[in-house]
Length: 50
Image (cartoon, rainbow, N blue to C red; front, top):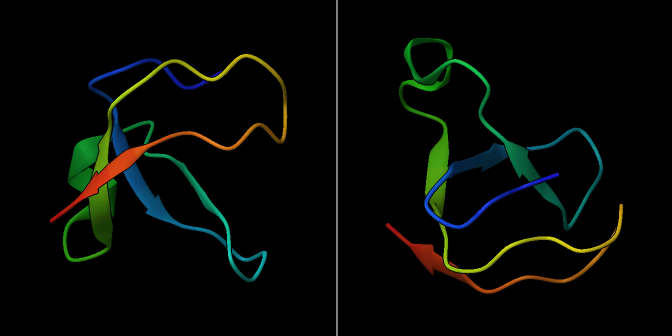
């Protein structure tokens, strides 16, 4: 699950993002920061786009 403050990166599923587990692996692919906690697997959350 994604928690507020975690980095969000691109996903292979169109229209979706995913949690960046290791920021060093996501350099150049970070799209934003989660602004709220995810409650369910495919829950919609607010993300601040960078």
